[in-house]
Length: 392
Ligand code: GLY
Image 1 (cartoon, rainbow, N blue to C red):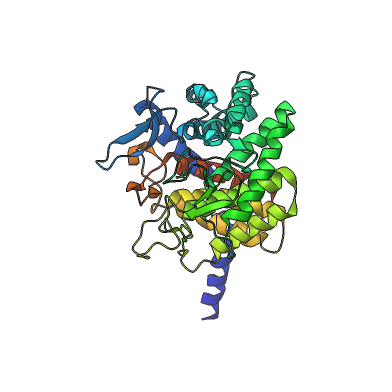
Image 2: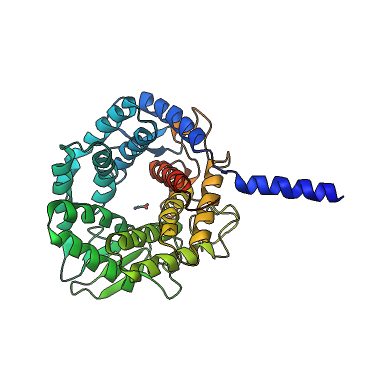
């Protein structure tokens, strides 16, 4: 009997000491799958987005908010492999978004431009990328009205003229880059004001967030709503993920402890939520009406894993929990439950995301940004393991 206990302990110990995610294997798969994606997408005006209800690929144009994710993912493949084939493909799909630098009709320029051009510039220092991003940052900043104190997300929502969605926190990283690169402090000031007003108006006492805050012209709040969540007062899963990622970036850029505290509170809300399943991939809304018979959102899982893998580097009593939770999320996403088999899933890496259930759009489908944040999280995980800061 004792011998069995000893063996069990030994196996248990080995399992803990092992790296649970084989990053090489995951990138080997990702390069194969995205190799097929490149073959099936010869036209750079048709960006991989998702799968239509009839199972065929759903492609979008460069003005769709997700157009930058494919190029961004290709840069992550280049970062990992150092293979010029990926550099060439990434450059091609990055430049395919360039005309959006003049687009003042969307707040999503952070996603559209910084994911492809920002990663491309970080990895190659290609001088052509810089002016495109700086023009894009200017276009984005036209959506900030100082009297309201936030960047306008959409031009209209229901009867409201100044809606701001929590997702908008994700554009700030782009503006911080623009401030540092151009020396124009205005970009940074916009980030601070937007983040402070979002913290004040988007968050509830339990640190969950509303999806849409509709502002009056004087900056007061007209209404607190949802567009993609289950209800106005519910916690839409991807919204929680965007906020967590956004406030983690705010702390990175400012070192202001109030943003770190906010990011930790959001993480704790998410991780301690009774409706977070054991595999740590959330339902599309933490308050979806029919849990457990609701779809999971792998994209929220990937964004959260990536954010936690940065948040854990800032220490504090929960750092290890954040790291271990992110590892669990990555383990789940890398398992057959969420990861496609080669050549299936319209060549996306991850299955089972939800774009917008109320609009019956992209429900339980692959979505391009789930892949992007999954690859980013894998790179962050690998970098942390190499540094030896955490043990899995
Ligand atoms: N930014 C839109 C979404 O997360 O669906």
